Structures are given as structure tokens and as C-alpha cells.
Length: 90
Image (cartoon, rainbow, N blue to C red):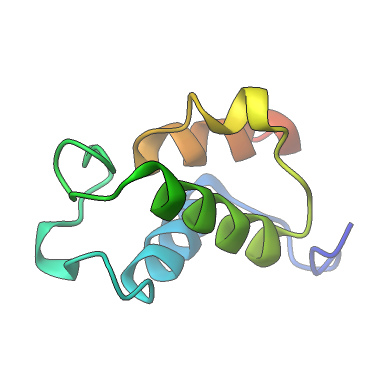
């Protein structure tokens, strides 16, 4: 794992880091971004953009997200929940 192991990860930190990664993505309007924003319907991304978003999240958190999982992660909240489940945060 690439996580800073001495810093315990909290749900709040995951929320903040996911939103930060998304705000830095040039095709996302940060003013429209919420945890519930749908990448395609609300933020206007296409499927290729969505792949790039998932890759940025993988880089940030240091693990791979299989395509079969990634295609279900269509809002920031979905991504946060996925990471929380993977890291066992509740």
C-alpha cells in the first residue's frame, strides 16, 4: 500500500482527497462538484473522461480499481464508499 501508514485514514480524509483529485481534473467544473454529482449526467464527462478520473483516483490512493468495479463508480460518493469498503473504514 502506498498510504501513509502512520496516518490513519478516515472517511472524512477520503472525502476530501477524492474531491480534491476531482477539482484538479480540468474537465470538471468545481462549482458543480458535490459528492452526489453524476460524472456523466451532471458533470458532462464522457466514458473516456471517466476512465481518466478513475486512474487519477488510483494514483492518489495507490491501488488499482478493476474495470468491472470502476464502471459502477459514477459519483464521488460511490468512489468514497468503494475506498472505505476496501480500506475497511466505517
